[in-house]
Every structure is written in structure tokens, then in C-alpha cells.
Length: 200
Image (tube, rainbow, N blue to C red; front, top):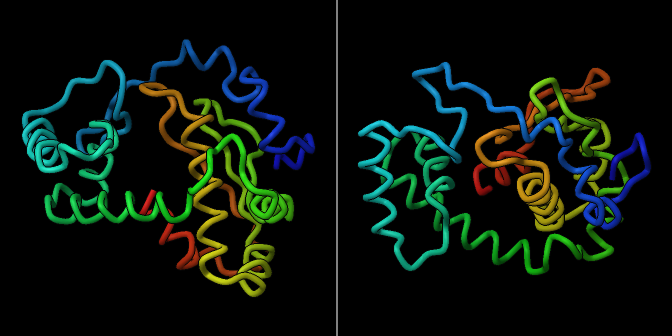
């Protein structure tokens, strides 16, 4: 739920102009780091090292429906360690089938009810059109105390799946920004967030 407008997920997906501003389609960031890739799709030039590992892992996962750009993300996340990449991709496939049993367009009311508490929400975009996610730490802790771990994982898995599906633009917007409202609470991510980030 977007707290600033009161807009819910179910209503926002009916109007794509709200999801990605028209100016974003004209924004193409330039890769300027040799150490960490910022873009994974679009008209990008892969290095020999990237290509070799990408092709090797793609061949290993041939029956699996996962895009090469997503495999490349896992390659960077795992520091080019092949076994870790394959392990995490398999873990993601299992988690997705477990936590996302419905379409993103039609989440169950239980998910929407939890999101409307406002412990995590999107408040707009930054100057590079990346979605800005607000995390209210005290509310997160309150929700965690009331929910089972499975429920927390399910709502976070849905939230970030929605961000990836509807607020990203391949080759242009592939990251998000995070603001944490701490109110003197710890700024460290919880194990629930780490679990979902590692899986998604």
C-alpha cells in the first residue's frame, strides 16, 4: 500500500502509468564500475568471465525456466562461485513455489491486510527512477512478534516480487533504494528480510 495516496496493490496494477513514469523509458544508466555490475538486461556487453560462467550454469539448469539475466544476478550475488549460484537458484525455485502460490495481480486478502499495516511500502522514486522502499523498523518488529516466520516470509516474498515485476524496467531500472524509519530501533535487517533477499 502506498501510504501517501492510500493506493493498494490491487488498484495500482490497473494503471501502469502510475507504476513506471514515462521519463523512465528514456533513462539509460551507464555502467561505470568494473567491480560490480549495475545492469543485467538490455543491450549490455558481457565480459568473457561472465559469459563463460553464465553459459555453464545455464546448461546445468537447462530444464529450469529462469532467465539469463536472473542467473547473472545470482552469479554476482554469489561472487562467481558456481556451486553457490546453483544452490541459491534451486532454493529460489522451491521458495517461489512455496510462498507465491497465486498470481501477483491477485494476492489473497491476508497479504493485503498485512501490507496495509504499513511496516513496508513504496513512497515514490529517486532521481534515477529507482523505487524507494520505506521500512518502518518498530512496525516490522511488532508484526514479527505477531506472525509466524512462514507468514512473514510470505508477505515479504510477495512484496518484493511485486516490486521486481511491476516497478523495474529491464536494462534501465534494476535496483531499488531503501529508507528505514528507525525511531532509535536497530537498523540491522532481520533474518526474515535476509532470507527473502537471498531467495529473491
